[in-house]
Image (cartoon, rainbow, N blue to C red; front, side, top):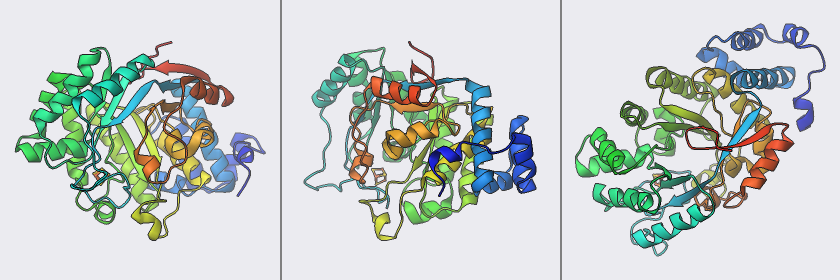
Length: 382
Ligand code: SF4
């Protein structure tokens, strides 16, 4: 593998370099530069790029990023809270869940949640990100109480909460359409929803990784319902397990289609798998390489350009230096301070539970960009 620095250097002029590579890849890059959409075959081909083609891909993603969002790179001051780890799910990539009656299973009391939210406000958080397992006994009234506790501490806090899998679980438990569940949560104060539980939006892949979790069609339905009801969501992809490159490309194109229809996604967050302490490790699955991560961030930037214009590099998954490197490959955001990350740490992640704002700013400056604090909806705050 080439040194990281070499990946970002073109030995020859861009036009000349384009003439030296596979015409299909060159055409895809030229298409992106002229603002036209990539198709599935082109996106999958770019996900295979190596050597000079990879360097050109990274260069193109950086140019497109600059054109769309300029030199600012952002972060949000938030606190992550997992209200329960008790879950009836069986996702093979998850080391966070505890089955009912497990001695380590927990469910935060309203007082515990309130204390965590107060602490977050004291540290300058503008957002609370709240997610949990699929608890068999928590109903809509319990979820409404969670929302009220957070908003009771500070109505101005942005509440970013409840994955599409949790919303689906609640809807089935209550026997209510998911739209009714979202409406009730919104009326209580829910502001936006994390686009997690997406993994790879392919039922073949989901059948292997998380057969009891919501399928692709239901994930899309829940997310579109949120968007239609004025609740924006993020979008994510967990990659590096059993999916093909075509399935990664298909996932990106599906997100683009949803965005074309609803306009409700705020950002895309690529999440390389952290398999160490999960069932996936015994299947021989390893974390994606630096080059694989670079390709995914760069291709996401090109496929989603003009639709979802913010691509987040996750320091939790990539480490601070890895996330900084992704800023050179199409990303424009480093995500949140989190203060209390649990899910990746339990899976064997080694990058800690939180970052201070000054650490995120320093990473952005070292990538040659302008650090700005944003809110959850990408409005600049400082
Ligand atoms: S990923 Fe979520 S739904 Fe799946 S087992 Fe873990 S906590 Fe449960």
